Image 1 (cartoon, rainbow, N blue to C red):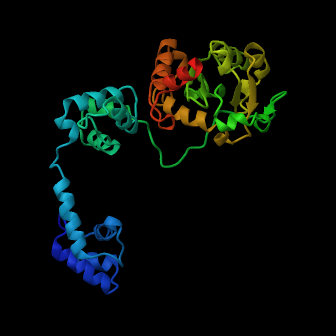
Image 2: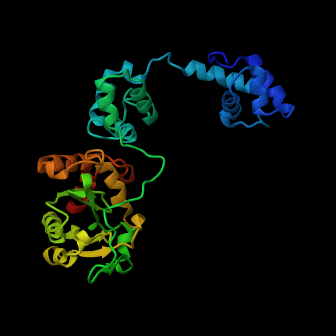
Image 3: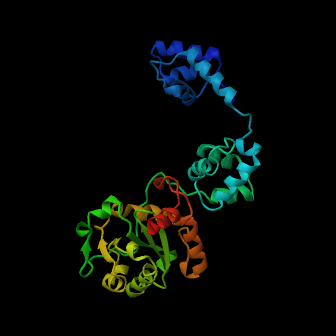
Length: 330
């Protein structure tokens, strides 16, 4: 096959004619000397199918699209102010969508300060290989096609003593209307030898990262309690956790903080979905294989502050800091 070039009007006419004769994509591609995928994409472009495809409309669409192309130029190349804004936010681990939406709020009347999330992604991937491209791509959250099963060492084989089931949790928690309800977890480090505690508030998505000395239940309970005690009283209502053995001393945690702990069902991460999603964000700062016993408290709290300073779609692109402070001051 020849090196790819755009379909001509004559080729489009041939595609249209052969489709009318009920020829397959493979047959059409063979006649034109094209890849089958080229013919398939052409027919499906513009929400068409093999019954509605018309050469004249396809050619007009192709011309319109070619007029929109910028010949290798991108919005960020021509707007230094916009480029600096995007780079600054990327380095804070903001997603392209968060950047695009916050631009509208920061520059409501300046239409030159606009860019779509897709344009940011495209720009990053067409950057020439080098330190800058590597740095900026590393700022993006890693997306996987398939969700990995969550494994945290040895699975608990017996229930925790005096455990309160999530089924006993107040109904108001599910509605997210009243703040002060948290979800907790441990992110485990390299070879299961270290860990980092995580708490996220269900209404404001405020994150608390908790350095723990070990996964010992008493150590974990005291470390979580130390952070929770710093919260305003109205923000200390409940915590939902999985049935990991590290929370075996949940009664000690409740005694210190007054916060009741409710436990999700085994292998049911969706019952703590806010925390599970937040852990994915935290992994941008501390990827799998991190040895948390070598991470300083300063680094942990720096990541916490950045997470709480990032705009969230679910909060109308306000930050957890903004929503949390608004609630406790109202």
